Amino acid sequence: MTKIITITMLFIFSLMSAQNAKLTVSISGLKNNTGTVKVGLYNSEGTFLKTIYKSLSSEIKNNTATVTFENLPAGEYAISSYHDENNNGKLDKNMMGIPSEDYAASNNAKGFMGPPAYKDAKFSVSKDSKIEIVF
Image 1 (cartoon, rainbow, N blue to C red):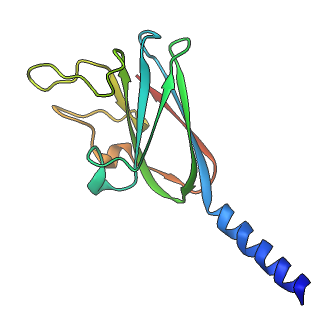
Image 2 (image 1 turned 45 degrees about the vertical axis):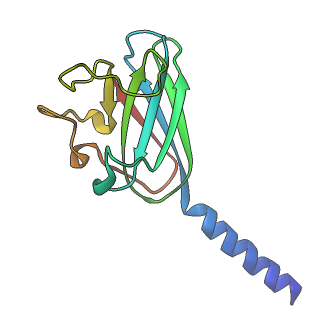
């Protein structure tokens, strides 16, 4: 009986871990190695660019950076990232509200007269994945 319970528990735990994925984000095209890259992961259209689901930052080497989000449930996500050149922890903007530091989104989505739309930046994660973002 103990053997059956143990096998059943191992099966349940393997199913639970199979539902979580790892997402590696490679960022290239940064103009220099100064500062850090901040990466925000969003899990819905309603929270995109408002409330970050998870965030990571990375040092820059050879004008590239990489972050890895662990234990993500399968689903739909979008990423917004920026080059925090002065390491002040925020995307700097000029007097008109236009970003003065470089930024990019997943799928290399671009906005027209504003930030990119969620529908252009969204992607699905169902297993370990890798995406690339070019600044």
